[in-house]
Image (cartoon, rainbow, N blue to C red; front, side, top):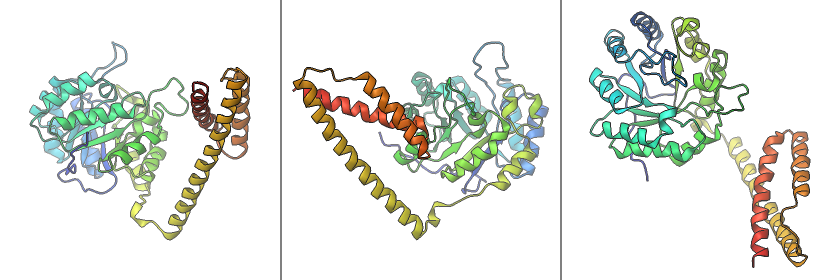
Length: 355
């Protein structure tokens, strides 16, 4: 399904990179919301965000202030002139937000992972013209992400955007959610006209990672940033460690270097030509390797040997991983490459043996 999209066209918001959406993780009290909003507005923020309903992993945590907070968002809009945005996870959330005049909605990662929930939201939005941003699902599944966008688009909404907030993993190293930048990059390749925002707060999970993640997103051509900012982050009722003050946010944005892709040079073109040449050579070498694998398949068939030789496979992975590290590449990256090559080699040998 091809998406039918229109520009986000946000009133009063310059359509230049980065479009910034900022505000606290959660709307906690009216005073906290208004203090943060006024401080952000004074520093030039045009779009305010705050969570009204908060999905928690376990019961007992702060699950959002609820409908009461929508009145505070309305006051933010009236007193600062900012657009206001929040997350919706059910049809009821949608109806309450529309009634309160919320300008922008977003769908969270847990909801994106549930097609039933996304369809419920889509059905509730039929006939409404409002920008909707869709976060990536918690798991690294591009098709699920695109499917959620298709469901919302299928309900007639054309002002859509995506939010990259990283992917959950048991292997948490530096980040709260692994960036896996190749996934939003592929989303951009598949749907080039779709605006993509980066959520450095949820990717990093720590406020000191927000600035470098913002710069990475800009270097990759992202259109906007959605950042958690709180008037007193350390006392926040949710996600305290990843929120920054409005002053710090302003400092981060001031330091951003925005590189426009249109300013490509001849030397960049030459380098890309070299990449193309290398890619051609890689394909030729792989084709040669597969020819040898097919010969091995013929030999194994003639001598009644099993295809999978575990010792040999492990030897290849270990040896090539070490070679990759010596050449300045990650050993895990090299192992993944050779796992894929081995899978194709086995497939081709199976064809020979089953003839």
